[in-house]
Image (cartoon, rainbow, N blue to C red; front, side, top):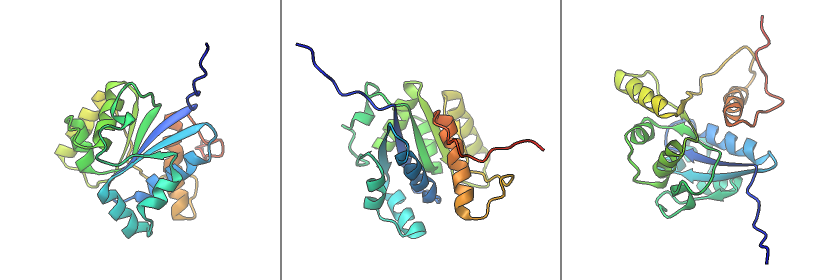
Length: 196
């Protein structure tokens, strides 16, 4: 007897939100991915991420969870995301704190966010880190180099101005459009450099 298994989504993306400033990046990424047909999102939100989001945006954890297809508790190391046998198309940590970045670089997997990032790297899937720190000292730069050599994409959300942003959200969206490009699901309405 033939069994009918559910088809996997076209894109399964893990979204991590750490405690760094810039929770708007994680929020906006979840909003934009939710708009895309065939995209399934898996959210991991740290406790400090929850706190920062409340301070910066007035948004509670349950509001972030409502934007995701699935959400996973930070300490649930039995989650499918903790195994390379669970296929995903990539992972974005937006924003990514230096603490999170450093733990990933040195293979510390003490919670699900770190374990999922480690799995993403070991399976040679795309890991995009929106590092939120400035200025950077030598230790930060060495850690970023270590991660880049491991296959991670280091993407500080640095604003561009050639698209003449009028609002803060225009600046945020430009960075999110770059993330979508890296994930292979580009926004057809993204404002792009046309040359001068």
